[in-house]
Image (cartoon, rainbow, N blue to C red; front, side, top):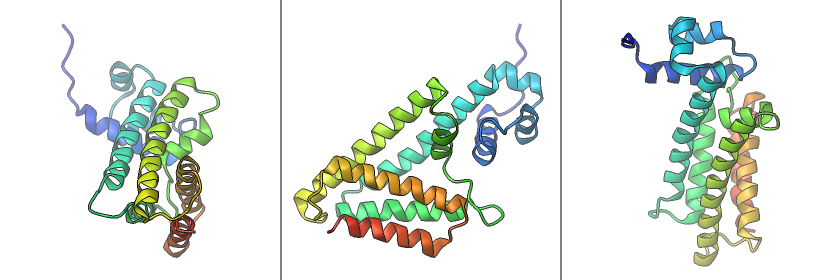
Length: 198
């Protein structure tokens, strides 16, 4: 008969996610994961089967949390489409500042994983592609609606504008990792909003 787990798997997954987010996949050792989760190696491997399996579960957890928050902002019909995108960019600035350690942000686990693994880890690439499509579709739909209502006056293709906003968000996260402060990030966000109204 299998022994019952004597730990909170959800809490362990959260701790692992934060460790991968701070260090990246390759730089996170099993010992780092043991220290972060408070679990021994055997408990980690019995529960998650491998470092990669734990990473994928942590990545999916991160994506589910962050993308849900972004989609909630974009779905807020109480604000104009342009204000929704402004609010989304504002949340990016806030989250980058909230997660700072030693003056720098760990950035975004999704962006970090694209840079580190997407070209050589098919499973990670598939998860990232699916998430990217979901976010791009949501942005495109808001932009199309904004173009119809007049809150977004750019006549550029909505899909191209969605890709632009998505790239701005990734760029803001990388700039924050490099130490960009609130004023610089807010300026980038406002420039992106201005581009939607030209």
